[in-house]
Length: 323
Image (cartoon, rainbow, N blue to C red):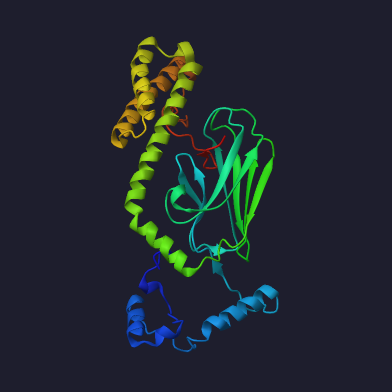
C-alpha cells in the first residue's frame, strides 16, 4: 500500500494466499491492515498460486484471451550517474510491460564515450545496488560538457526481459544490452533489498544531498568561468574583482575530498548572487542606448536569465560519468 500510495480505505477487497493464512491470528492481522474488512475466502489458499501460474502460462501462450494479468517490476531499475548516484528510470512495482526514456549528458569536456551501468535495487547509490550489466557508447563527438544528449531507454517486455539502449542524438549511434531475468528475483532477495534500503534511507539521503550539492557547485564554477570569458569586457572591472575571489574559493572547496555541505551551499548561493549582477550589467549595457526600445515591465518581456541557475530543457538532462 505504501508503494502504491494507498491507504486502507482505498482497498476494496483482501484475498489471502498460502496455507499459513488459515491461522486465525494471520486472518485477524490481515483484517486489521485493511481497515477491518474481512478477507475474501472464496478461493482456496493452497491452490490459488498454482491456478494463477496456469492462467499466466495460458495468457503467454495465447490460449487465454479473456483475462489480462499484470506483472510488476519487483525492484527499481536505473543507471549510475555523476557522483556514483543511482538515477532510477523504472520504479519498484511499476506494471510491466513498460518503457521509459531519459536524456543524459557528459560530465567533462570532449568526453569521447559514455559508460552505462544498469542497476537494480532501492538504495540511492550505485555501489549499494545490484549491477545487472554494463555497456559503452563510443564515438561521442568532442563537445563542451553538458552539450551532447544521450538518450537512454529502459524497455521491459511482458516476459520480464529488460532491453537497455543508449543513443547519441547528435550522431544517431546506438548501443544496446539485453538482460533476462531482471524481474524473476526470489522474494527473499527482494524483501532483503527493500529492508536494506529502508534501514539506510536516512544515511543515503544525507550522502546523496552532499553529492548533489557538490555537483551543483562544480557546475556553477564551470558556468561562471565560461560566462565571464564569453562576456569579456562587458563585465565591469569592479564586478569581476568582486566575483573572482568567490569563484576561486568555491573552486577550491569543490576540489576537497569531503567538503562541508552547508558551507558549500552558502558559497554557491553567494556566487550565484554575484553572477546575477553580471547578467544585469550585460543587459544594461545592451539595452540602455535607446530607452524607446526597452520593454515596459509587465509588457511580456522575458526576465533576465539567472546565470547561476541549473539549465533545464524539455528533457531533464543529467550528467553521467564516462571515459
